[in-house]
Length: 338
Image (tube, rainbow, N blue to C red):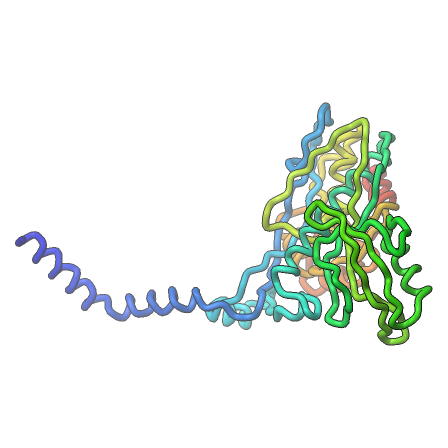
């Protein structure tokens, strides 16, 4: 009993002597639990893609091909204040990175679907470039977003099979079908939902002179190849911006010549089935992060080049910036870098 009293007195005295510190700690802990409707973007780093794939008999690589990324965190009162002070941290409201009528859950789902499409396309483009046989068996579209104006019973994650009995393999086909309709025409849409076929419909509407049904979708490819490529990505990753670098990493692993030439290559950019490189966001954070990681070359989509050069000049970055419009341009530049 005496030991209990002594321990109690010790704790009481400790609290009295450190009351201010304990209050500060309690306030910090409480503030950390308060979520604000902001995301904080900051310079990211480099993900070494050499460690992301599993391929039989892949070649050894002296350098590395890296994917640039943006670091972000959910804002609370403390990090919000920090973002107002730290120049390289920027606040972004939820509605600035989500689409109209889209919650954060749907935004993340859309990002995951875009990532899956990007990785599949990267495999196909890389294998073709390396001379491997590719047989694309089926191509379909998966619904990732529906606008507020959409008058349809389609649902997110529906896999589209046909529009008005026409088999669909690309979003361009959908655009052509819709543009041939009139306002208020109803299009019959066959989909797969939860493993079962279902017939849905969508009414055509007009917005700023163009016809829409109010839907976004990603492509889903089923293909066969004489080389199996397994790509590993983290749960927190989403979006298509790693497409170009994933393609380069896979290509480099399955061809004899090491196109890194011992250098640390990093970059960003989407990739489509024809090898075209598309624009991405977050160039500021990706470029600054790549420079901090002492990468040698930053490959950037042509559409983002001017922005990247302004950032390089403003922050006096030493990293070399190379613009590309296609996978072949990126590959050829690296191959000629000896």
